[in-house]
Image 1 (cartoon, rainbow, N blue to C red):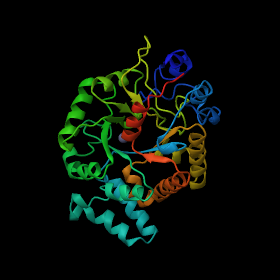
Image 2 (cartoon, rainbow, N blue to C red; image 1 turned 180 degrees about the horizontal axis):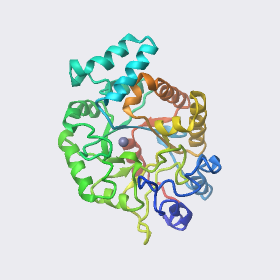
Image 3 (cartoon, protein in one colour; image 1 turned 120 degrees about the vertical axis):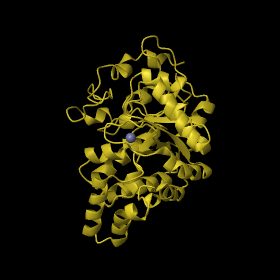
Image 4 (cartoon, rainbow, N blue to C red; image 1 turned 90 degrees about the horizontal axis):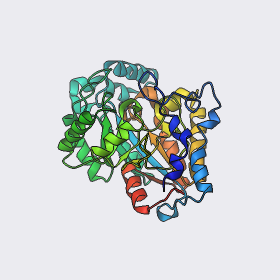
Length: 350
Ligand SMILES: [Zn+2]
């Protein structure tokens, strides 16, 4: 049933070269190097279109035309000093006393007042649009930049996320994408803190080795991964706007894990777009493409984007996107929900 994917070496060749400096295996060919090549390549889900032409049928719940999967990587729950200084500077510039107090006083008032502990605020925004999302927390201790946070500090907030029907998953450590031992350890730590099991995964810095990372994740008990995206561009990294079960490089064995490709990450989007207007235009184009092909468009907005005065436009764009998708009657939900639906819908690639 996945024969067609296996017979398309061009899909897989994009990932099997030596990788970039972060071993992300994304910047290896024309599909990634968007600055030197035609950007239409990565903004067009050619592979999904080919499947639809061959008869792929995607029926979404309640006859929705397309799905939008919302995700948040929790890289920080406490602002590092330079974030605090930037936020204070921008609050002064914008004459925003509340924000100034929030960013300057939390270190004195106590960790629980950290502006990055904003999960409730994020969920409240999404709830207004009938949406849900996934939050990926880190438990890794080793990180190339700094130790991020103690997962136990996030424990009580994770309970609230799950109680409201949102999802908690693992944000795998920078050094973990190719280590079964690390992935298992991090998963156990998260589950011990949360008090229940998790099925979803995305690696920090989008580090992913095709197909080794997927093999490891499947063996560790994850049901889906959503790492497959660009760090420096938005679009369709493997030409697909639908989830799929990846194959093992070499023998083509279908792996027991669902990949839900990542399409728009806040950092990459604003790096690529020169202005809010441009960022919106690109986002709209990707969402409209998702609608056209009955696809699933996955967004990643980091939690700090919602509480940083210097990233105000990032938050504003997120709300604008949700409003647009709501008006288009999209199914806006978490990766966990997408996984459940996709696995039960029995969708066959022709
Ligand atoms: Zn990260």
